[in-house]
Image (cartoon, rainbow, N blue to C red; front, side):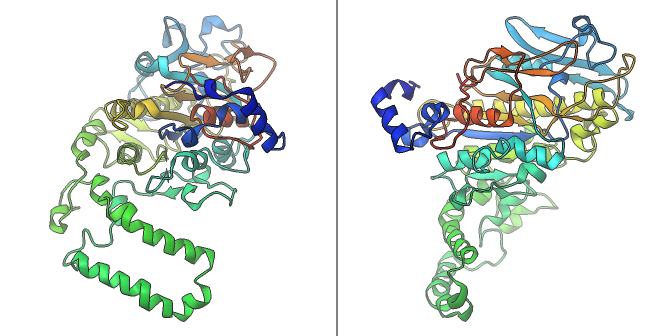
Length: 494
């Protein structure tokens, strides 16, 4: 797509600056596009890699031979860190007879993901501002309250969500599920929380799935009587009907008929199979047309919350229900009985407190495997009749609340780590200027350093802030940031 920036003249830039009282920064000027400029919807998928996904245990891993202090900081045997021709990105492939304290073999291979997607991958270093789980999670999606407390998801929903039924879907909890503080945003921008993705769609129709339900015409008449005669005479609604919570509830109830029921979303988003536990056929309900394909892609969908979330996120994008979805792995131990492998560590990445290397390997492999499957689905799905795929318009942001400490004793293979502010983030999208690392890592300390936010040049004398990552993601998404006061970060976009 031709850049809109080339059509903006100096006079118009000056006019915009005057209109905003001279308060617009460079970020606002170059990012003021979105739907107003005719750009089709863009989609944001946030993966909350909770517990501290360490970037130096993945795409910025350091080899023993590169560090003068390899025995006392988190570095890897040379043969376990894979490089790629023409790429600064790395991957960690390790095998161990056991996965930390679990008597299951550890086979973690990141290289297949990087090999397949490196041209659309970008790692940006980051130093955060909190090592508290919930606080760090929230700041990873608000840029430390960088724009009146809005979340990334709310910004994307505001920009592109007008024509979508539920623009902002969130399947996580904790700080990743927080809503922003900017009450001036339209209510549609705030997230709809989903606890059980497999069964959630069953609540999207007031009649479908109920045995001996009244016919549609009768239900419509009952609703009309309620809206036009019964509720207007209610003393309670006469007294409190204009209260904001009740007004919003009535508005959403009315929209549900056209946004949810009339679109048949109960079945389009139904991941369940007809079974003894869920006898769909008894209730005249069918699975999603994509359910069988999704169960091949995510074979543990019924037992693995992350696979169920990923499957639903795909259906939500495909059926134009939302423009942003947020998912994360469970905090429960999951074992793949077929391969006798540890799928998910207890408390996810945070079990690195006990067994850093093995748990980082398990969890990174898990995140990358699900991400790879989602990319494959989005690539094969048209976004519209333009020839573009959903993947062409999607950005995946692997967010984490903080990093992990780098110290170890005597070259131990597995060791414990604590929370640390210093880290980095992984982004994957065709909209990025990919196959890059913004910033870098000092091999003698294991700590990352920052980059110039406009050129992307490494800068050992600075650290990248949460607000800069926040601003850079919105710039890639072409969200209008006029008047936000965000720092200008243009180094991420292609």
